[in-house]
Amino acid sequence: MAGYARGGRRPEILETFTRHVAERGYDRANFGDVAGELGLSKGTIVHHFGTKDRMLAEVQERYMRARLAEAHELFARLPGADARIAALVHAGVRYSAREPDTTVAFQREVVRLVDQPGMESARALRDEYRDLVVGVLQDGEATGTFVPGDARLRSLQMFGSLHWMWTWFDPAGRLEAGAVAAEFALTLLRGLGVDEAAARAAADPSGTVAGTVDEVVGAVPAVLSASRSGSGVSQPTSA
Image 1 (tube, one colour):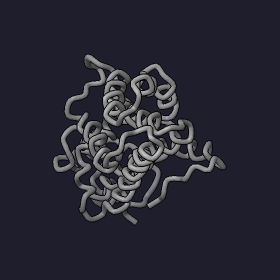
Image 2 (cartoon, rainbow, N blue to C red):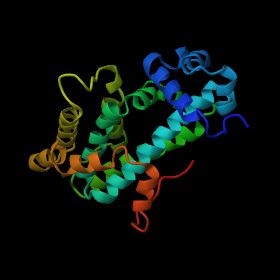
Image 3 (tube, rainbow, N blue to C red):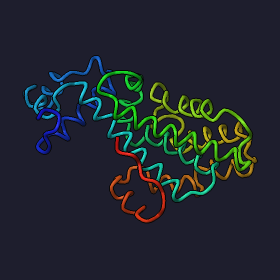
C-alpha cells in the first residue's frame, strides 16, 4: 500500500525531501526534483509515500516523536521546573544546529498542523509536547519556583522564540548554539521569577543541565525508551 512500503531507498528519499522543504518550503518542494536528484522515477516515490502531503506528515511525526522521547528522558534526569524549562530551551536551540534540515522543515511548515487533513497524528504529538511544557510551568508555579502567571501563554512565548530561529540563526555565525540557548534560558527564567543564582546555574552552557541535554539530544528514541523502562516516567503517546 502506498505510504507504508519500507526499505530500499525510502530513508534517502525522505531525507532529500526534508532538505528541499527546509531550503525552499513545502509548496516549492516536489517529487520531480527529489526524483531527479536521486536518479529515481516519480513512481518510485509514490510507491513509498503515496502523496506529498503524506510525506510531510511523516516528517512532522518523526520529528515530534523524537522530541517527545528526548523531553521525557530529560525530565527523568533533571528534577525541578527551572532545570526542565532550561533543558527544553537548550534542546530547542541545539536542534537548529544539529538537525537543521528536519528542524527547519518542521518549523517553517508547522502552521500546516493547525487544521490540514492528514496531519492529525502530527498535530496530536505537537499538542502532547505543548501540554508537557504547560505542565512544567504549572508545577513550577505550584512549588513557588515560578511567579504566578498564565502557563499556556508562557509556553507560547517560549515556543515563539525557538520556532522562528530558522529565520535568523546561523550555527556557524557569531554565537554558537550553547551561547544562544544560555541567553534564551536565562531571560526566560528571570521572567518566570527564578532566583538569579538558580537561573544562571540552569542556563549555564557548561552546567549540568546543558551537559544532560548534550547526552540526550540526538539519541535514538527507542534507546531512550529502553533506558526509561521501570523509571515511572510516562511514555510518549503514540497517536
